[in-house]
Image 1 (cartoon, rainbow, N blue to C red):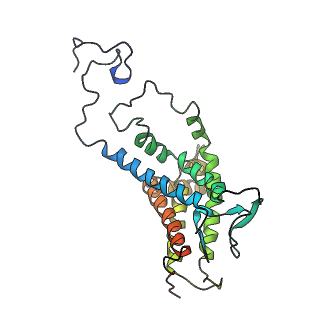
Image 2 (image 1 turned 90 degrees about the horizontal axis):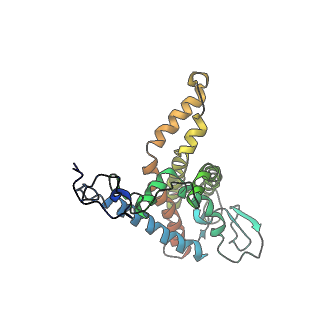
Image 3 (image 1 turned 90 degrees about the vertical axis):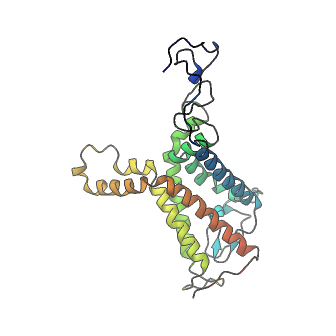
Length: 275
């Protein structure tokens, strides 16, 4: 406990060093490896950022019948590779010369960036705001999400609506994966299992969103008068308890699905067929 007899910090000090705080020499008293969690989070997110950036700008090896990379679906530019009965919507004309992935990734990216779990992850992992519980952040002041760019976090619900549409399109792509390279139905390959795993995790993560939970059961004063919404709210709540796990699992699965299509399209190996 501080006695008040210790020397006061400089007048321009802030945070735990502020003159109004107890005069404790140490910034924090944690002796465990508190830095390990934010460092691991930063490493994992940074690895995905590097990989997804490379794949988004590559503009190649994203389609191998019947599989299309989730990074490029739906493909809404004119310079997309033709995909038989696939998600080809030539909304953008020939003037768009960059990778078509850049037109669609903004929606799932915006959904994840504004997600409550990912806010905690990159706030701690990259901005040290704060890096861990009971560890002070190295910033002079805290303004929360009231100023640009963090005020954009408030549009998370609208990104949720877009994420639902993207998940629906990826579901369609998964259905199309039950074809062979000649677009004949009734076939299943290893890629089909990869796509099934990915879309399951994508839907689980999307529906476990805090905004989804509020939309389903928010603003209800009497659950007894809304039994259906109450049951849905309970179900989404159970998913929400695993939101962090589902966030990481779906992040890995979407990268895995893209990488699998890349390997097939680049000729690294052939898709094993079960039937």
